[in-house]
Image 1 (tube, rainbow, N blue to C red):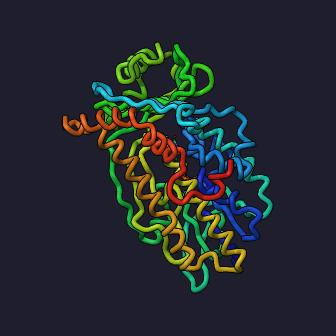
Image 2: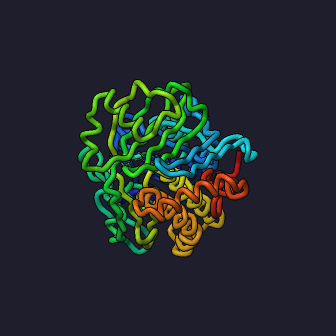
Image 3: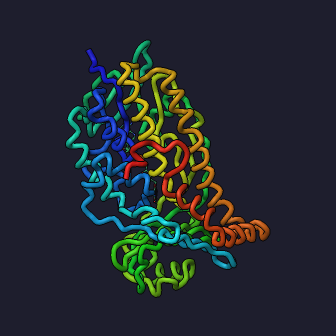
Length: 404
Ligand SMILES: Cc1cc2nc3c(=O)[nH]c(=O)nc-3n(C[C@H](O)[C@H](O)[C@H](O)COP(=O)(O)OP(=O)(O)OC[C@H]3O[C@@H](n4cnc5c(N)ncnc54)[C@H](O)[C@@H]3O)c2cc1C
């Protein structure tokens, strides 16, 4: 007889792990199935990418007891500078001027992953199954049957609700034949850290150029996290450049606002593509995080958005548990879709349009981009609205996102 869980979460990445933690102590029987060993070095997305975390995400991670487990001090973002190379408009958002302490903070994904793994260890009721890969799904009348391969042996599980948190190429989404609308930006992001002559001092920079955007995130002291977009056809060559040639390229694209750069770390390329699942649910199944939508990293929205998926879902599941409801009930899943759709649509469109508008070589559109930046710089109420949305206070904000 296979084990019955209320909820089986497949994928223990940043989003699936956050969901498992949010459900701990709810009385629901939850299992978390993850293909990788539960170690930072083994988990593919717990790597050196620097995550800009919105204020609402930090609030929620604090309420979930994850933030307290972060060992490396996160670098606060107190200013955001947006500009376009060769354009006349630029905008500067300053948290203090808008009456805010900070917009968010920067933390390497490896550090957040480490904190999540620590916090998962203290989950009392969670059944952690790792390393184990979901290889089969069977829909039954009142549950979903799952075949999981662990240690060369197939194990059977049953769930009243299956959560697909298994990333962009989601096995769960494919099994349910849910379409994926894909857009290839034909660009790759090279991610690394470097030392700046002048400390970024809490300022995050977004700079748009014809060859793609560049983002620089503040880290401790004089270090900064760089995300440099290059055409994918050129990514391997750029990743192999020696330090001097790489720094010269960064200066060509970013300029000298922070003086001279030095000591770049290893360069890792990530091909950039958008993926939008054509549906978020199927009977007794729901998709969250990158399995539901994968966005360009330029707007720093991917995990922030996925965490909001996890928080909304956990709230609905905990509410339903109080009323002895069925976690896989169709009306619960419909409420989840209704609750997440506005934020999902707005955030994925924002990330996509930001990249397309700012790369558009057609002069009127470029001027429009410059004008928009200039206008934003002169309209404090609009600035505040943009800032609050960027901080994750958008749509139906979950209670954990609001708690300081
Ligand atoms: C360069 C870069 C910079 C970024 N910067 C930011 C940023 O500043 N801010 C931000 O909010 N976001 C950012 N993101 C996005 C963020 O990293 C992702 O949105 C986030 O990692 C998605 O987490 P996830 O848990 O949904 O998916 P994933 O991290 O892909 O996790 C999926 C997990 O599922 C497991 N899995 C897959 N298939 C199976 C299976 N069959 N059985 C069992 N387990 C399985 C995998 O092993 C994996 O651990 C960035 C992304 C990139 C690439």
